Length: 61
Image 1: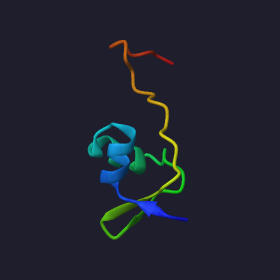
Image 2 (image 1 turned 180 degrees about the vertical axis):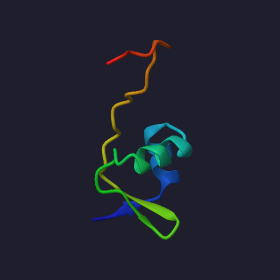
Image 3 (image 1 turned 90 degrees about the horizontal axis):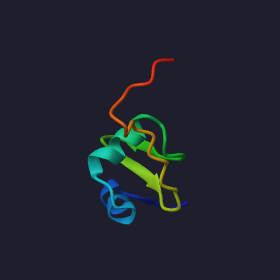
Image 4 (image 1 turned 30 degrees about the horizontal axis):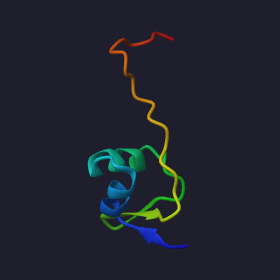
C-alpha cells in the first residue's frame, strides 16, 4: 500500500492541511497513522463526509 503526505492529500481533496490533521487525530481517515511527527495517509483513502455544524445552531441531545 502506498502512503502520501498531508500536503498531497490536501491538494487532492481541496481542503486545508490543518483540517486533514484534525480528521487524522479524530480517526476519521481509515488507515492513516502517525510516524514520528508525520501523518501517513493511504493513497486510495476516501474523503470523509464533513459533519461539522453548518446551521450555527447546536442541537441538544
